[in-house]
Image 1 (cartoon, rainbow, N blue to C red):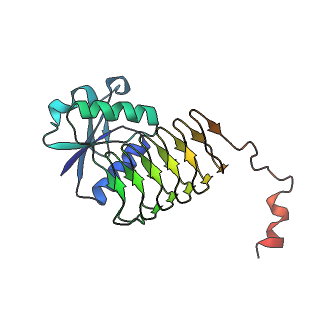
Image 2 (cartoon, rainbow, N blue to C red):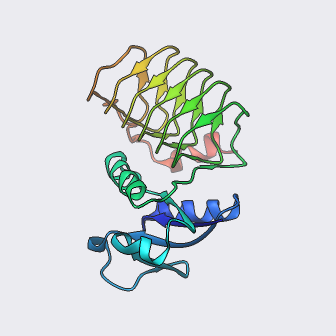
Length: 219
């Protein structure tokens, strides 16, 4: 099967590589909106064509598409536009991810190689799971990005949410739509729409130079 990737960023390059190496799809090119093309682009030797005219070059009857964009709202917009053009949006679940045979997932879902997903999990359309742990009976809605986070069992994530690096969600929590759960956050209560959580404290630089510690600890 042949596939086109929407996007020209590093995630698009990464998605192209793993989909080609670890699925039945052969990625043959990329597409992007005209405003992002200012020259004749190629990515790893593959052509980049205009999204506005992609159906004329790579017809939906012969090619499938994956929307490789990190921004949830942009990914949602392009997902809907690709469907309107008649494309089937492929999903990729890495063979190196830890999943079970009752995993349910929709269109344009991406699950990376270092993800761990327990049984009875549902993942809706257009959601990206990067290196995350998802507990049993959890439900992940549409247009979400989960980046190296940890969800306990029976968690519900609505639509268009971002969960950042090392964020942790207690079992049975409901996360409403358009939430941003920042890096390192620990979520122990339900949320409402459009909430943002972040940890203000960051790692402090010590006044002691590393030269003073090497001989003491690194032997």
